[in-house]
Image (cartoon, rainbow, N blue to C red):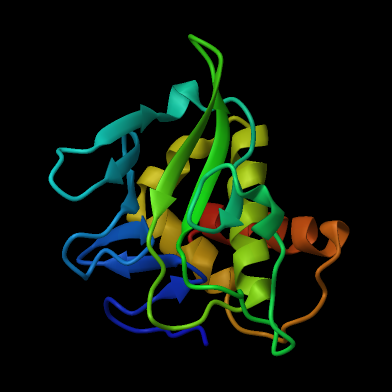
Length: 181
């Protein structure tokens, strides 16, 4: 379930950890996770300095898939009857980059807690809309992301149409832009 509080704010696999936003479990050692930084998405990997994808290179919206391998996109929408993500093999953030053009994916390890389907789909809608509007750099602002996440958390595990998800993301972005929680 969504949780609000110091260092406990989260939306699906997105979580506030020590003042930065991360997709995946950034608290366990030897895990893969993606950090939102002012300069772009930073892939953290065990035994590596990781790699940075600058915001300016991200060309199309980000989609999330589930499974052990990045090409396993059949697990994009596998959810339990309780409305949570099925499987524990980790996840992937897929995007298209420019200069040079390429399909790219970043790996993240799942938390021990389950992710509600509605939270994952709302997160994906927010990421997609920010990129479509040319404003992905806002993800590097922890306060802005916190306000947007506050507008997306909670509520019923329903209203999963693309139209409803887009409207919810638009409202959360407007609240974040205005500085309202």
